[in-house]
Image (cartoon, rainbow over all chains, first blue to last red; front, side, top):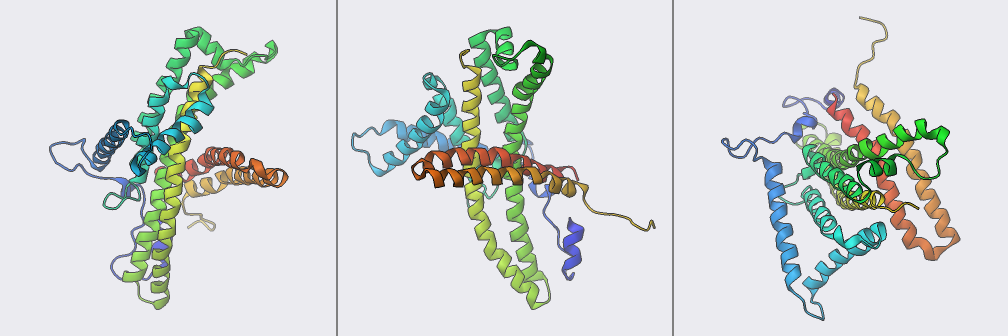
Length: 266
Length: 73
């Protein structure tokens, strides 16, 4: 990929270094603490912000809501009505704190990708979506095992009701792999890949535009650089949309998996 | 030098092939949203909500393709 771009632009200061996987390597902030890099700093900052927001929201309880209380209530009702009640059904109150925390955490960490001074979506390092998906996997399997028992839950997952016996050797491995193995993989990779690809797109436009504008010779290249830098604003807008959508999707799918694990037999 | 030597990134070719399916899938989703809105304009809100969920799930496959094309060289 870097070969393609460096062939196009006249080399003045050594060529264009295309963004890639190396753009996501961040060293630890302090030498003595190897695990505290920018991702961990952003995650801890997001936890502090979310705790502050919801604690302040839980305290103000005026009957006629003020503007701040209205925003918090809108966020809470959005998760409660659209995600929890519609997906899980009558038992949703038990899982509501999990869904609110998950939605807040993924949304704030995604939006760090367009936030000034930080400009890095935390799930673009693959470990963060892996951790969230493992937690969701343990939870929805745990809910199913608590409700149906271990073998009852395996039967409930691998064998939809009403399947004739001759199709069992085909259906059971397929459903087992699809429900128990593939679900956490796609859940994590969906979040990771959207954040990774989106941040890479922003980097290509901004770094490419800067290189074309400042490090290239002809006026056509400089104009192309200006256009690329202006268009990167539109890409930022697209990133806001994609990041919010991915946070919503993660929470909706978690609610869906919990609901289908805890569902009653028809 | 061999006469017909191909160089470049095989991962990007794989992404290109892998983006055919989700492209058709997303087109089908929003085609049905447009048709459903034409038949019954009042149902637009509920349909758009489901459409965005279906869009994200289908688009995930194409996005996984481009991300893994970078990760695997």
